[in-house]
Each structure stands twice: as structure tokens, then as C-alpha cells.
Length: 364
Image (cartoon, rainbow, N blue to C red):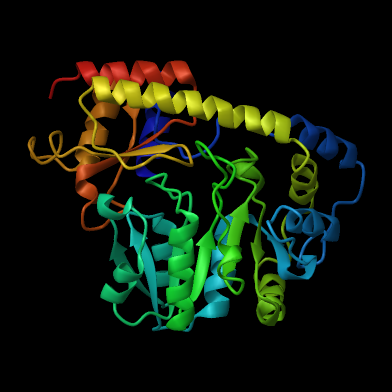
């Protein structure tokens, strides 16, 4: 967020900025969703039920390998609200919940804000940046675990076998499992496996932000086991009332926009190749798998440690000297992130190529 703010300030001063820091699609609302919103604007868009529009919940349930009963699905104001509801439902202050490093920092920060201990679980290239039962054992007693596949920032897609092993470990050790599937649909090859196949009692959080290009509409969903539905719905009623009605209408229509949305995914695939080739030419080759989402997470000690800079220092210099905005790894991984940078390839292809060329030509 600090880099995004600095980039905005630079642009406001009249300077060009090439955005590799923003984790959101550059595409707009799908056309079918636009049409549905326009058609609904003359209708009263008041509160929906706390759980959301039933027809939207039914359609979401049909997206799973084994269709989910709509009663287990609650529409929420984005995945962020979904995680808050999940954490409040599953955990008490002082309990220990594992979060992967590198990983999305808001898991950790939300847990801390709720008085729950966020236990760092470091993963690396030896396991393709994915957790294993051995990682969980090394973390000690856990009350919960948050996983993401595809992940932010590494782009790792956990295999079906890896998900099965984690699910079995959590079941055996009574660890509540929360799965972030927000980047499902944005993958390089086969669809990312769904955690519910192996852990039917897991809480799954998803969103219309990434694949559906609806970040600003703040609408997502959670899938919860039957025995937690009432608790989550009551929390939703008290904390948020409901997800925005107009955003739910847009989301319902967006579910039918797969042709347009899959075209965006095809564009990300090409962008990924452009970025990997450009970073290789710049001497940046030590990267995480990048087999899903739209990020490249790169290890750059030759540009940080060797130059006595942190990744934050490096990103600030690139912004000031090149007009290239990137994201330092310091929030994703508190212990090792000072040597890592996340590059987003969700933006315009020409900007990615230009940014990589500028980085390749940069001299400290």
C-alpha cells in the first residue's frame, strides 16, 4: 500500500508510472454485469438477507466439484469480510493459527487485530512454496491454519495430493482449516484443486475480485459447514448487515461471463511469459512457481544484500529513478521478505515489457 500510494503521488505530479505493484485486474466489470446493473438501477436496491441473494448463492454452489447446498454459502462484502467472519467464528483470543510465509499479510494482520496469535510457517522452494504436514508439525500445537491456492505472492497451486495431505493432518490434529481460493480460475494449466474435496468441514473464502475483475465492487462468499452457518450469519447481520445489493446483482450476471473472463486469463498467460522473459534478461531468475494468480515472486539478494539495501529501499529507488512501481516482500514474509520483490503482471503488456527493460538497464 505504501508503494501504491507513492506511485499515485508520483503520477499526480505528472510523472509516468508503470504499475507492477497492484494486485488487481486492469480490466473492468464484465459486460453482462454492466448490463444487469444498469437494468436494476430503477429498482429498490435495499438490504438483502444477511446471507445474500438466494439465486446468487445457488449459482455459486453449482461451481463446485460436488455442488454445495446454498444454505452453506454466505455472500459477503469481499474476501476480507469473509476472513473476519471466519476467524471470529472459529477462533478465540489467544489461540494459535498458522499462516504461511510468504503469504498474504492481511491474514496475519486480521488475526492479530482479533487477539489471535498468528504463527508464522516458513515455506520455500523445497516444497514449491506450499505447506506440508512436516511444516505444520514444526510449528507446534495449532488451533487453525490458513492456506491459499493459488497463492499470493508466490503463485503456487497446491496439487491434489498436497491438499489431501494437509487436510488429513488438520483432521487428525483437530486444526480448523481456512482456505483462500480467491485466485481460482487464474491458472496456467489445469484448474486448481478444490479443498472441499478433501476437507468437507473447511471454511472456504472466495471473491469476485480477481477472476471476475470486480475488485471495487466488494463482493465475495464463504462456504461453511452446516454447524457454523447460524453463527456466521448472525455475525454478518451484526457486523455488515449484508453485502451490497447492487454488487450482488453484478456478481450474479458475472457468473455467465466466462467467455469474456477466460479471455482475460489468456492475456495473463501471455503477460506471464513477457514478464518472465523480461526479468530473465534483467538477471532476475530465482523465482517462485508462478503457476497461478498473476504474480512473480523473485529472490533478488544480488540487488538487496549485495547493495546493502532492503527490498523496500530497492522498490523506492526503482519508482523514483525508473518510474517502475513494484511491491517489496517485507509484508509477505517478515523474516526473509527484505530479499524478495513481488511483480504483478495483471496490467498492460506493453508496460510490463517496458518496465523489465528499464530494470535491466538500471545501474545502482
